[in-house]
Length: 468
Image (cartoon, rainbow, N blue to C red; front, top):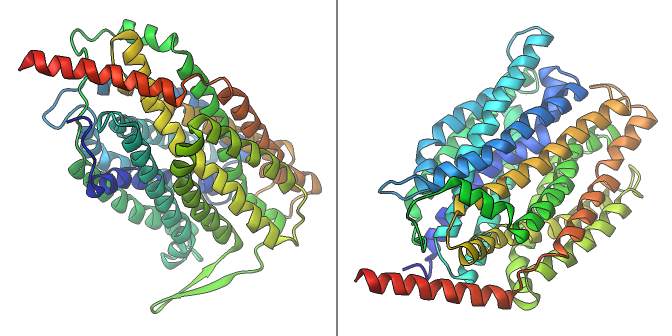
């Protein structure tokens, strides 16, 4: 059963789960900081510190959720039930994260800490089991890479939907005269869509892979095995570094266009009777998401030829050089800025399906080496790496804005503009360079993984024969 081919409908269903998460991941990473500074009304430095504190705490929640999911037993499986149970809490907290209460400045900051902390914990509670689900849908490495690619295509499609519609939708909801209302109502619409997507993912997917040894679950033993898992440590470092690269670029984009490029050039889009005004920020972000999808589609054929590790190395090296060169563009070179956004985003799109597929490989490696399978615990580290990278990148963005003298809704100094430019060039390049360093030491070759999967399948077949 574990090696059966997965149908198109199920792959689409699996992808819808990440479409739901990614809509909000992108809203958080690209718009939440500027929402907090320009709409909500707290300083960039305060928001950066909040991101650091809440995200570090939440990163520690991910392994707890992974352990809990590994020990969940229901007629729907270990991981799928969370997609059904947590969808509505996810939607409700997401909406109130973008609500602006009529509080004093200090109470607003407390409100932001509470709602954002709850949001990140709920995100873990649904996203860690979702990520782990791929590890038990199939043991076939090609099917896993295909699943991962479907996941990433839908993830970037969800991001594209959110980034393409959030500003026009916000205006449609009265955001031009009441931006606080516009944000709240727009995010509510995305929350309803996300709930439907999570429930479809639950309904359309199936758990197939059973552990070789499921008796006597031992948390201490699972953690000990994880701590001694060298490929896991290496991939964790590479994943954190890649997310630093991505989160700094994402977090700085809205500031870059509003305060460095300027948004005088807007473009009208007609959808039926509705007329939407697209800013350069929206065009830049939408181009990036579309290019991410191209990268995802390229990941499987390229990695099939040269391997996952080599694909990861090559695209991160290219992204490093492109990011450094990005600093050279001035505010008049919008066309080149857009071209390099596409090229860098293609590189970023390539690595994410590889990361998820490699975590599934590491779960196999751990089971082969230790005789125990801890899919949820291992996949929780992928979510943890996302949040740690996002934490470092998001906090750095807020702190740099404060350090360079950023003032919300004002003409920026030359120092502040220089800092904003660094967020889309040299700082992301540090993340890609670190990612290259880590992945160079990754030891699981395609041939070794083929042998590992073969031995594990023999054990599963032997168990099935004994049961019969």
